[in-house]
Length: 147
Image (cartoon, rainbow, N blue to C red; front, side, top):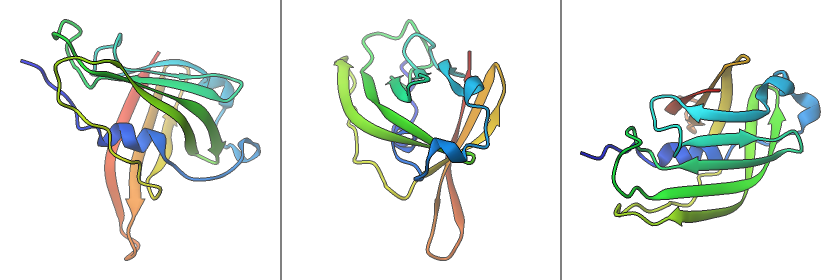
């Protein structure tokens, strides 16, 4: 049986807050490199953050690496870090493997923010949320990555 996560977390990866890397409060050297989405198939769900501020994200949402014919999306672009927030400037999104899923990609929500909650040599935790007009912080999800 195939298991997928909701693609909303992929969208939260794409759109975040504005800022410049000069304002980073996280150790950027720890941030750079290849990350694997914990709990999902490592081969199909990765995030690569390069020191030249380019990124590549592959996402299938599959837990099982042996799942038959998953859809796999690849998002590429640049990123910026401002304080504990990371913003991905999406330049392309492609369905690189068209499997048997009937998945779709929605337009990103510009109000979604991704906050780096934890960053170590081996762990990256990012929480996606939206602040509503009432000031209430609505958490959309938390993604945990490991090297």
